[in-house]
Length: 116
Image (cartoon, rainbow, N blue to C red; front, side, top):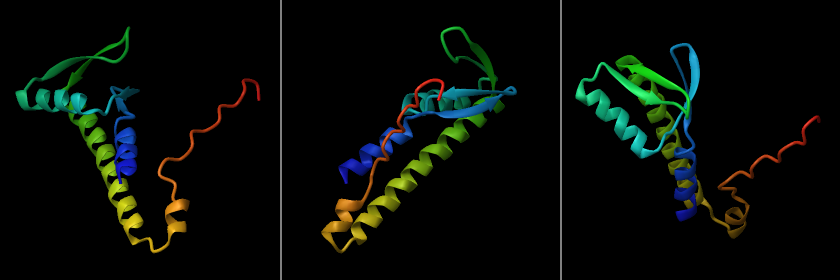
């Protein structure tokens, strides 16, 4: 089951895309990011300066922070749901072949050459 948990962690920390202030941005979904956002909400801050990338800063409102955090938490919950379902499926197996056939991590897509 370690492999299933590791795959859930990989999926959980891939990040999410959230539309804020009319633009889609990528946000990390790791535990540090979740804690920072939750602490900002708990502190009562009305605004939070957030560095999106090396050149882009956003001033996030309480509503923006709530939207980002809710999107991240929904994503994380779906990862735990996947892990639970996968483990339950594995536990229901009755043959060795079923264990051999299960795919825990889908293969990464093969990059296509440019111009194809």
